[in-house]
Length: 63
Image 1 (cartoon, rainbow, N blue to C red):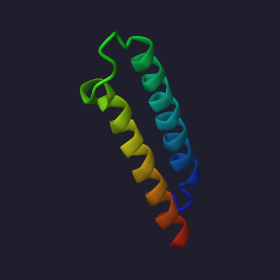
Image 2 (image 1 turned 180 degrees about the vertical axis):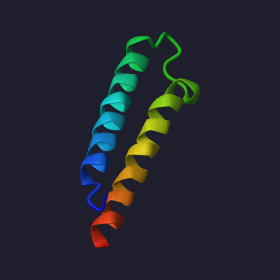
Image 3 (image 1 turned 90 degrees about the vertical axis):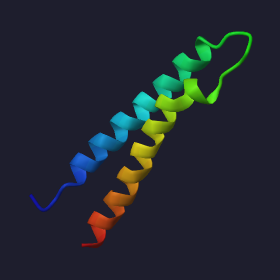
Image 4 (image 1 turned 60 degrees about the horizontal axis):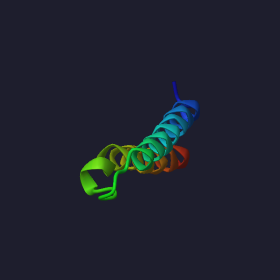
């Protein structure tokens, strides 16, 4: 299982789609007070997963 590019691509695509969906839902449900950090936590977590996935994919290509 040397070539894992498809795994990194699938994780990246899924985390990006979920992050965007979470942002859309968060802003759709935003009330008069706006959006706080607590409401953005799921989106920020998925963004972190996406960025870590990109870094790991780059490291995998170098090997």
